[in-house]
Length: 59
Image 1: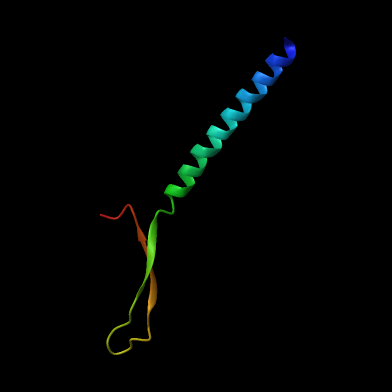
Image 2: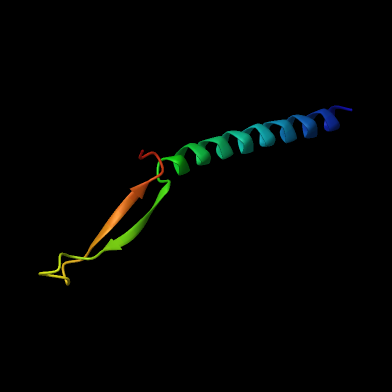
């Protein structure tokens, strides 16, 4: 009986650790939501393009 309790305890600890890691990953991912695009330079210097980062929190 003790062996089954130990297995159940390990499973519980593993599931809690997995859930906590998932929540942490979601929080980290929310910091980098958005996208990127190339913005062309002005007509006088079109070769001066730059990479622009967008954010989901803008607006």
